[in-house]
Image (cartoon, rainbow, N blue to C red; front, side):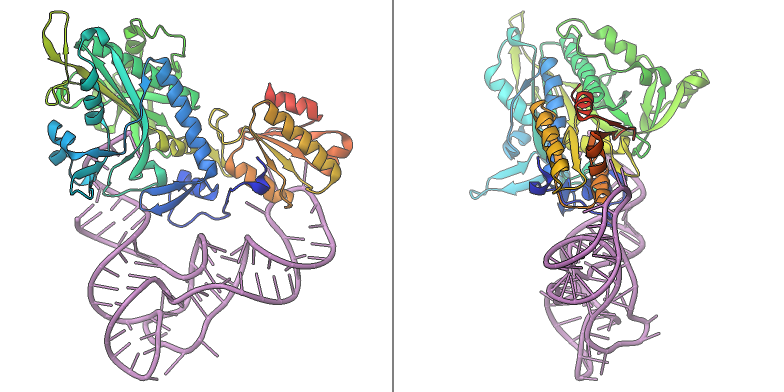
Length: 438
RNA sequence: CGGGGCGUAGCGCAGCCUGGUAGCGCAUCUGCUUUGGGAGCAGAGGGUCGCAGGUUCAAAUCCUGCCGCCCCGACCA
């Protein structure tokens, strides 16, 4: 992409409404524009990042055996009356009437719709397990939206729903999602820890929140240090097998957010293993049994020939929130530092003297080579001063910067800078391209 | 929803208390000079001062109502 043709409206100063660093940087980098409280338009740069995160989530869901669908944003109130949630959900639900005076709502979540889909087709335990997910915009009419897309009213969520014949099978489904989530966060360059969450009316230990560690996080997190250093399980698991061991390795170590914190248990750990940090909640998974399948009569016939409500769980990732969460976890005074996996562009080519024949030629060569290698380069070909280009490229956080100036061109070198470390080196173009392309 | 704060040019702000022709910095446009970390000089454009009433000879400024936005709290991907 040539910057001269792109739409990347960066700001030197942050709008006063933005309080937290991710919100400020998203506005300054021209990623989003606020349209109303908690409602944002995604500008090209923001959209690119959102799509990349979405794709990472999609790949890990698919790997773990989930199947993507797309459910509507508008849902029928009648379905929610079946589950009993229409009246319970309260003011957070945006209710709408259509021209026939029929009650609709903008979905805050999709248990009812997915259960309706499931029960229409699946009748036998032989068709289980199933896991259906979608990545779709949700709306929750929050009392107080805040912190940019971190807590918007409209937000992009990946929500998966598992269906199993009994509780033991449901637990296996739960375990798959538990481990898949850890892989998602690792690929996004985040340190995430699963903390025990309030399991609600079902009880048991089948609900976890995933917190990523960032100094500016909203919640306090207490955890065993080994849990943080354990890392993600990686893709090479036996996803159809018994994952209980992998999960237990992690859930047996202490981890809790402030509301579930048990001071006595925490202090029972050796002092050097106690970790206290700030966290941002970026995922929540739970098993809820027959809470929806019961009232909505989503029954399957078991091996014994008897019908029983299917066992369900649901699994949410805040995709749009992750954009902000990654920035909270990865930025400096100069701006955003994107992990390579979600950077809006893989590399930037900075032409310090647009119009100079030598600089133009080197830049064009670099730009074409990077594009051909699938690095999705952003070429700053604007007629602007070097300082402005450096500042803008740092601000938007492109991982690699290939700096082409007249001095270097005369000597046959370019400068390669790594955004994350600030490390710079002068080297011939071929070597620089090799370093980026790998 | 309780408490607090703010709406003046694209962004950041001053002016309001004490009513009298709407200002500054950045950004934008033109010209010249510049060109390795958000340039300099000269000139230019851009604002129904959130909206509606009211008081007054006169309202960004005073009064009333409404709308919008932000922060703290209780709830949440």
